[in-house]
Amino acid sequence: MKKYLYSREYKKTNTIIDIKGTKIGGKKIIVIAGPCTVDNISYILETAKGIKDSGARFLRGGAFKPRTSPYSFQGLGEKGLQILAKARKETNLPVVSEVMDTKDVKLVEKYVDIIQIGARNMQNFSLLKTVGKIKKPVLLKRGLSATLKEFLMSAEYIMKEGNKNIILCERGIRTFVEYTRNTLDLSIIPVLKKETHLPVIVDPSHATGRKDLIISMSKAAIAAGADGLMIEVHPNPKKAISDKDQTLNLTQFKELMKEIKPVAEAIGRNL
Ligand code: PEP
Ligand code: MN
Image 1 (cartoon, rainbow, N blue to C red):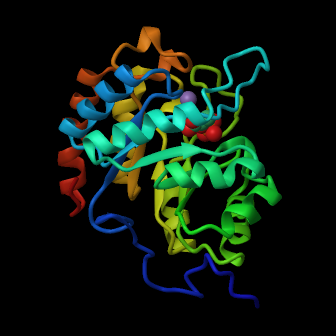
Image 2: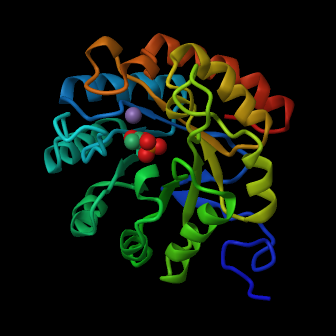
């Protein structure tokens, strides 16, 4: 039988991705936070400083946005990446941002520390092959209706091209349930940890679509073995360009960091 590059048969020990000294997949739970969409420098700086004070390790923000409607704001593009780079310079927080098109991979790679492949592009095979050839780590989000096998095979596409630094992200799947935006598939966390040596993180923001559920689902994700979280945060969520309803403000984010700490410690990990 073929030993897939992602598998525990191929590599027994956990892959730990070291980004300027911050290790993803090790003992520490890594939290990535920031707005859905990069809007302006003052909000991004305020976010970066606030999340850093509370213990986040990475700043996130979309400059190329996969919006459901073509009439919705599509992102600031390179200007958005420049804003993120400025915030990184001021705060020393590494940044994560999404790439949607093969033609933009080089550009996004130049500005970010981790390149994100969004749920809608999980099976965009030419995009996967292209990011497989770059040096920066890839945060691969699970597709809206992707099976475990499909998710892992998308990671395999990237790894086959040479890039072995992949972070898998569970972000909720489509079900019949209507009280949340998606359904957080918590059980995929231990299953992924068994099947693959790659780090696994959880995005409770897109999984629930509801800010009142973010803290409890973050705790559950950590208890289930996730290596990190990705949380949408904005200093004034009402003014956020996208995903207002699932976006925490800086005070709520601070509370989240306080609440997840004892859960991490209970399972022998820390923040
Ligand atoms: C995002 O993280 O910015 C995003 C668009 O999420 P997803 O691809 O999971 O919908
Ligand atoms: Mn979003």
